[in-house]
Structures are given as structure tokens and as C-alpha cells.
Length: 150
Image (cartoon, rainbow, N blue to C red; front, side):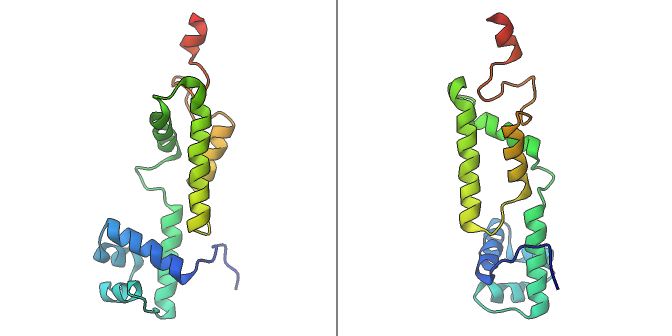
């Protein structure tokens, strides 16, 4: 049987679940996964879940990696990146954003088998110049009003 999902090791799966449990709660993540809190707790303590529970955990991780959530969109990420570098000199902003994106790509490569889809999308949009609306100051390009005044 083939799957369109990349394979993840149990240890990486355990790490991902641990991070989410720390950010929320054991019960909340157990509900999302479809396991009992005690079963999830045993998994986090190093136990090996039954095949059905492992499948639920892998399915949950797949959903988590592919779900941006209502409050996280590619446009929102672009706005956040623009905000992070807005106080830098205009001629360094584009390079700075590309450095931030490269660092994120490196981090995902080191810690997971696959990066989230939004990362590839924001890298592409930044490369082709469509990540920032025309009415906002793009990273290293002057705003239209600045060009008109020059």
C-alpha cells in the first residue's frame, strides 16, 4: 500500500505531540488525535501504541502539518515578515526576509521530514514579488509614492 504522506519516525512523532501538548493540554490533543488521555500519556512516556492508535497519531500529525489554521495565512505570514524587518534600512529588507525564510527552511529540514506547505508558498511568492501588496512598502523596493517624489 502506498501513501501520499511522508513517513515520520516514532521519535519525531512523539516530539511533535509533546510540543503540542505543552502548548495546549494532554486532554485537548488526545481529543484531536482520537485517543484516550491515558493512552496518549503512555505514548509520550515512551510506550509504543497499538497500530490503530499509531495510525491515528500519524493522521493527526498529517492534519496538523497541512492545516494553517484560521489565524495563519500566507498573506498574514508575509505581513508578519514585513513587520519584522520594517525598522531595517530599506535596502536590506529583501535580503533579511530571504534570510529569515532560509532559516525557517533549514530548521524544518533539521527537525522534520517535511516543511509545511505555507513555507514553500511564501518563499515562492517572495521570489516572484507577489508576497507584498502594491500599497505596502515591499522589502527592498521603494513604494510608488517614494518613486513619484524622487
